[in-house]
Image 1 (cartoon, rainbow, N blue to C red):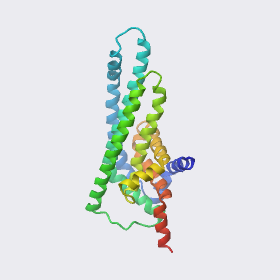
Image 2 (image 1 turned 30 degrees about the vertical axis):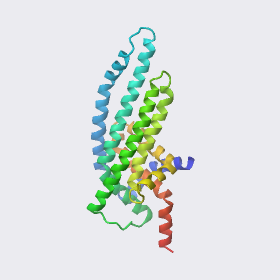
Image 3 (image 1 turned 180 degrees about the horizontal axis):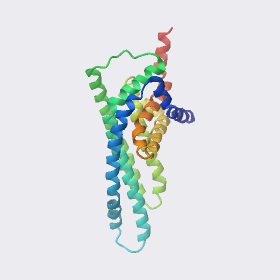
Image 4 (image 1 turned 90 degrees about the vertical axis):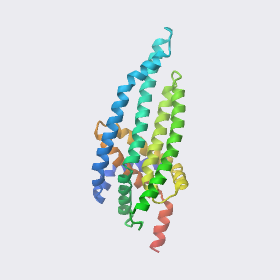
Length: 255
């Protein structure tokens, strides 16, 4: 756990160094611009709806007794709901749209780190295969994340419980966000089930990567621009370090 967290943070902090060493900055501009447009639009829409959601929650309590407490709780819940929904929409839209940019980024980085290529040329058949697999995995993750997030949001309606559910929602969001970033690498080496097992085994890589992504988004404007690029690099580095099967293949090739 500690090693996974530490390695992921180190890879994130060294992302620009990797990008400079292996000439990866060309992937930053387009992915950053797309992320900025999508994220800005979603979070502006979510912010404009936050007051309406708070008023709806307040309207459910028609008694004077406890109205102050309900008002405070509804403000916390509405803010939490808007933030979760906004991040949820942004995350999956960005992963789908910039996937064709982040997958080559991950591949070029891996080739630079290992000094070898997987030998598979880019083709229409390969792109279609990766899109089908990626879509299937994304739907699987979306359903699971929705289940856990909605369950925690329901629990957060109970006064004071929001203090406990907020960090748990953050962990859930981080895990599946990190999963998506790791999958830009995993899609080249593992099938559907093996990718899931890999991420479960190194769950703290996924959680840390996703948490860093979310923290990066807190930087106004620049965070939206940089987050996908930095965290894809960090995820790829961490996965390369942990892909024992690939390391065995490389060792055999040089024997």
